[in-house]
Image 1: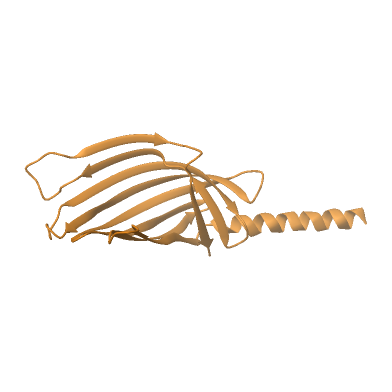
Image 2: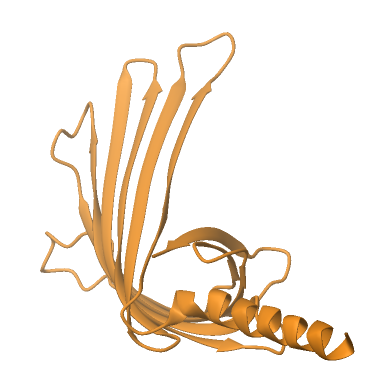
Length: 200
């Protein structure tokens, strides 16, 4: 009887390990991203603001526990103050690579992610229909961890980590060298980023 129980538990344990870790096997894929919308109106006036964001992400496991992919970000913000209307639209393309390292708990893995993002924004308002355009490039190395609920769903929590950013606030003005370079490091436990991913 003991042998049967031990054998059953062993089979269950092996099945659980392969069930969970199969999400990060070579040849698998994952999807993530988000959609957000907000609308703000000031009581007693006509001032209001609407914003929208769409951030899909796709990854392909080129090796066990190692995924490469591409993220896309599209944003839009419209602000109305009296007769003045401001619009800001932005975009970013961000290739990334991530490596998972599982712990003794087969549902739990640490990961490190490297991202290179390229993007920009365009601003317009009632007085200046063709406003300034910005360009931006950012490199980030971000630590985090993931919890795998089952064979398809995982929860991510990661921090900004080490970043290098170069921004041109007016890329149409080639006569002025006004680029801004920022180097930062942030692993603030009070400001992590959460994400849910679908593996298949």
